Structure formats: structure tokens, C-alpha cells
Length: 285
Image 1 (cartoon, one colour):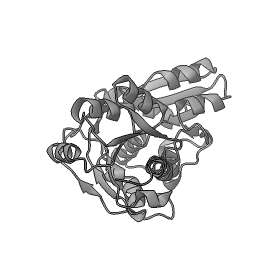
Image 2: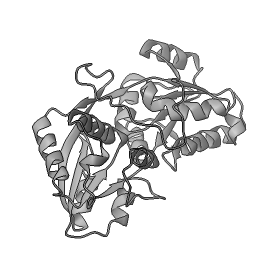
Image 3: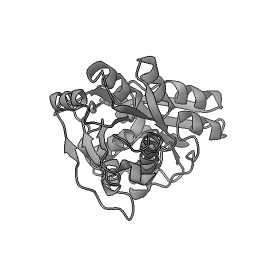
Image 4: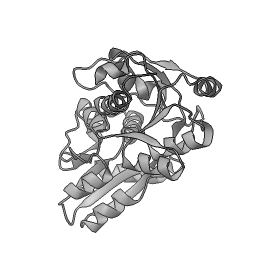
């Protein structure tokens, strides 16, 4: 199935730094990765509320910290640096950490933060809620301003006392330079940082789509699907690959046919979804 990716041109709708792991894998499989950033992230407007929540975290007020995205971890890394500390030092020994995806777990562990709970099969908010058994516990949940309520409500329904705070704002790319959340995270243990893939401008991406020279576009979030619907349609022969059911649902709601949904939100899972699409087409162009 990996052979079906040879020569395929795949557009990743993330910034180059966030697209590197997937782009590196696709290159190794013979594909040509391209990036077109559509969304970006800015620091939370209400820094006082965020700082107060982190002060309580450091003081041991929470039994659990739930990290639902890599971007949340970037926020914590930036906040730790501002305090002359490390992300691991912000989390007391008695506070357990839960997360959703393998990328977040790997980044947490690379920072020396052990993960107590993370879904293996359904790597989503629903998957974490399904595993949750801790009742009458205090949970800190830093999230994006546009985060769906499902995780917060699911944890609360399971018996947790959830404090939700806005960790960052999701904005159209590019974020304002003075507000952009861009703290560097270390590579996963045993992995080097791959080179940045080629980045397209929106006009370049439009010309490529019109010419039919992009084989697939990958969207990692519902907000990316919304931006694709607003800025890149029609996709022509380009196949839409979703990462996660919420992304696929958002694309479908906006009239974008979903060629495949990555079963696992990792570079390997996305490559497998791409490979399946092209293998089913007989690897013809």
C-alpha cells in the first residue's frame, strides 16, 4: 500500500513546523508533501484567568490535568519559560495527566511529564471520556476558545469537577506576530527534527488545484475543514483526507466529500489512509 504513494503530491494544511513529522514520512514513502497553513494560534486574551488557573495547578489544587492538544502543551511550555521553570515543574507530583492523541503523549513524555491516561483505540475526546473512571476529582482543562464542549461535559457527567480555561485562540493564518503562540517542543524521544517541507502560498495552491496537480489535501481539525471550505473549493480531483471524526463531520456538513478518515491521528495513520485511497484507485493518475 505504501507504494501507492509514490509520486503523489499531498497538501498538508498546517504550518511547516507542525507538518514536519507527516511530511517527513510521506517523503520517505515517495510522495511529495506540500504545506499550506490555514489556521494559526494566538495567546489567550484573558491571561489573568489562565495564570490564575496555572497558579492553582502549581499549588496542587487539581487532581488531574487534561492536555487535549499539542497547542495546549505549547502554551504550558511558554508559560513555564515566563516563570523561569519547566513544564514538568508546573505539575505537582500528585497531579495526574491525561491526553488524547499519540503526538501529545509523545511530546509530554519528551518533556518529562508522565501520562496516566490516554485512549489507544478511539483517540479523541469521546475516547478519553469513555475511559474516565475518576469521580469526585478536580480537573483542569485548558482548551482552545473554539473547543467543542464534549470533553468538558463528558468529564463532568462522569463525576469530575472540571475547571475549563481558554488556553489559546484559533485564528486564520497568519497569527499576529506579537500574539502568536509558537513555543518549541522537543522531538519525541529517539527522533530527530525533520526538515521543513515546501510551503505554498494561497494563490499557488489555487493554481495547483485548478491544474489538477495536487492528489490529496489533509485536514487535521474541524477549523481546518472550515477554512478549506471557505478558501480552497472547488478541490477538483484532489481527495480530502480527514484526521478524526469531528473533522470528517465538519467537512461533510460543508459539502466536501471525504475520501478517507485516518483511523489513528499519527503520521503512520494518515499515510495509511492516503495509501488506501490511492491503492483503491489502482494507483492511476
